[in-house]
Image (cartoon, rainbow, N blue to C red; front, side, top):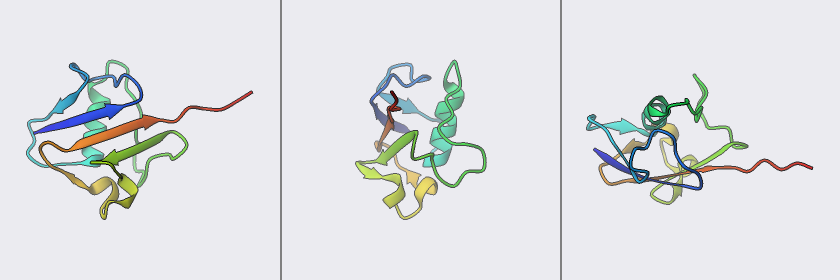
Length: 95
């Protein structure tokens, strides 16, 4: 299965920078983010263990242009071959 990835940063673990290939034919958004994290040379913590949601102060994630929070199954949304996942890291403000 191939999932296309868009982002506002260079996603560690994406060899080609544009898509994520998995041998699995069924993959949830949660599993996708965990696998993506595991592939990174330095692990990126998209999702804390046991969490039911991403930290809204750190990440915004969309599936095919729809916020994962608006998907009926949230992080358990099943991705299909050819889906696009957009991952945005939120800039920290400060002074």
